[in-house]
Amino acid sequence: MDFTVEFYETASGNSPLREFLEELKASDPADFEAVLAGLVKLRNRQYHREPLSKSLGDGLFELRHVGKLNTRVIWFFMKGKRIVAVHGIRNKGQAIAIKDFKTAEARMNDWLQRTKP
Image (cartoon, rainbow, N blue to C red; front, side, top):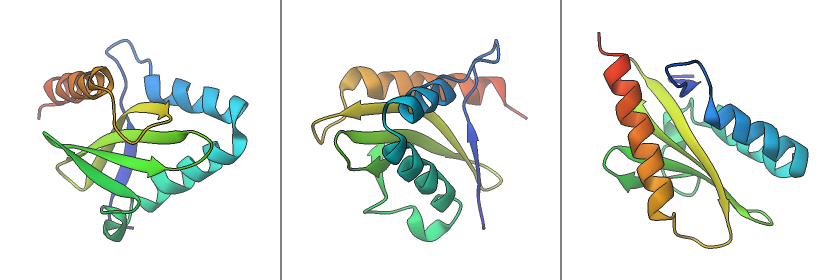
């Protein structure tokens, strides 16, 4: 395993992605297990491309799972072979809504500001 995967946390210690995953676990256990397996796969470089992952631009990527609803986890790379997962969504379509992209981008920028060496 080359990379570590960690979850974004707010300055107060909340993890919106953990909350999303807990809700997913309760509402759709099969999709939850598939998304969790996808996050584990991200530790290997070979899964950083389609069909599991796709670049969204501006340094953000998506982990994709197709089920009853499409489930996506948006993430970015950091130095030291780290992946930070920042946002989770479910939708029926293929596109990610601009508001979700902006949320992920804001969380990425917040994380980068707070974790500067």
